[in-house]
Amino acid sequence: MKTESLNAVEPSIAKTQDSNRSAARFESMPQTITLKNILVPLDFSEMALKALDYAVSFARQYDAKITLLHVDKLKEYSPVLPDPQPLGAELHAEIIHHLEKIRDENIPADVAVDVTVRHNFVFDGILAAARETEADLIITTTHGHTGLKHMLLGSTAESIVRRAPCPVFVIR
Image (cartoon, rainbow, N blue to C red; front, side, top):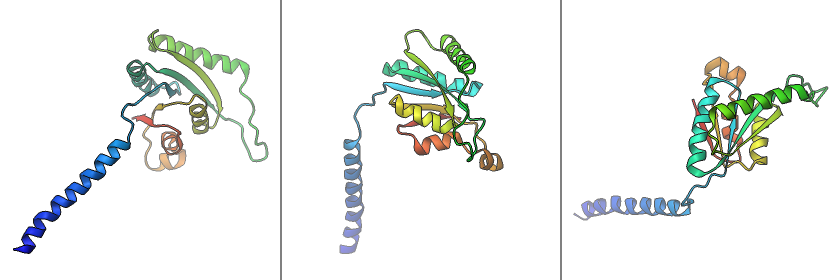
């Protein structure tokens, strides 16, 4: 009889301990989420525009600013010449123009937007921009490469998630 009563008590003790841990974890979490700066890296693909739709929704809900970012991949880099060729002024202006066009066509006027261009390795440029803009959230897409393509190309989204200074919302 005693064994039966102990078995009956043990699960309730475990449940109480688990609920105490859950309550403590919940109490340590921020009660409200504040988003002031949302970073949206764009590669000018249709998928990237999906991320922008989510960013606009979040920006409106939290009255946040969106920073549209394009990272122009380094084209020339070697250990012998560690400093890559700078992004030309003409190409920089062209990319800014393209970002502004996306802003005008896809983001309502009541949402604050900045545009910026980097010339770097893609995930390094995104992480640097996230730190500099003090991004509260990065919204990005993944191309969903698997297998050999993933091994050879890597995953920019995965690199961002692993090293970002803020939460990352990834859209497939």
